[in-house]
Image 1 (spheres, rainbow, N blue to C red):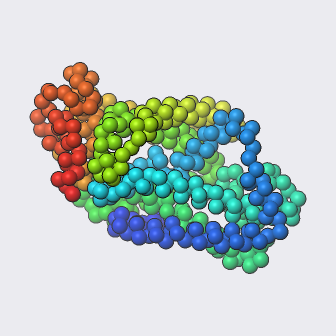
Image 2: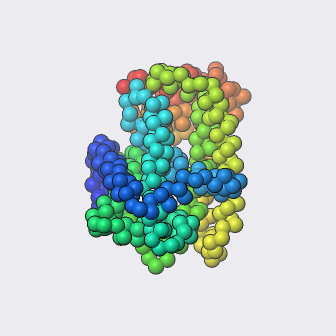
Image 3: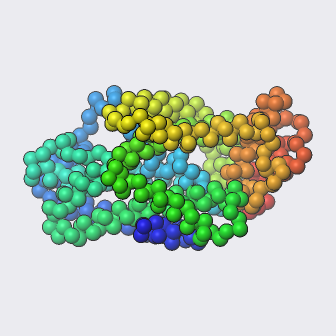
Length: 406
């Protein structure tokens, strides 16, 4: 409960207050990691853990599940597929250099993961040498590493209470960072959809935090670990790959890779290579399709046995995230876009991702209905009532709207 109160305090005043909190919650863990690394490297058995950590096992590359786990880790740690990146990016200036961010975030993420591995395995190596238990026989997968094995190793260190306080404070910061990012994503989507405009932001944030707190109570019951395995296995990995692949297809084919490159050149003053654009259009969707199939097979043949009702609930959770994608994609083919009669509710929404996606889906529906190009080359008049920002008569309509707003 205290954690969700802290999350509410972070997001109740908007993205700017969350950004200020992120300076601490993002930087403090690095200070703790460096302190733990110095202490871990000074332990007599640190070399045992570092050797185990840095020695590659190339035979593992032949196991498909390893690739699924690696891709899932990248999706989790960088925030891809969760909606967080587009939500926060929608608040950037028009000329923000997002290309630089796209390079920095993966580099910093991988560097942080490598640093965390040095911290963890230097301490586990010393623990292994003292107890005589090989590292590969320890519970170093899932939540057992953070909440069982590593705390046991810290307890054996000199001044153990200090390092334990630093370690769990770091976990608290990391949890807050992830949670208020997710809540801010939900609130941004709610604001863009025009839902609850009569309620202040603090009330909407409290409602979101209260709902998530209620759902989270499942994970602190006696069967909490089973619920965690169920949700993690069905509702996360599988749908993340689907969302990532659909995003690439939407940018590469619906919105248009060439138009995306033109936007990047105009806004970030960076020219994207053709090879990168073809990655968006073909390579990445194909790889994610393979990972999706493998994740589906791994989930269906999991060694963790759940009762039939739990398996059915797991697939419902997976479909709850994936099913809205095709339904919302075909909606413009069956009925007019809601923006045609209601208009976009805010300048940021008109120039943001929501407006671009709506315009792209409308162009796709026109291409299927009238045989025109899905990139807006049709000369047929736009439906009456369609806002100028979404007109398919101009190829640079979204850029024009962005310039007008900013």
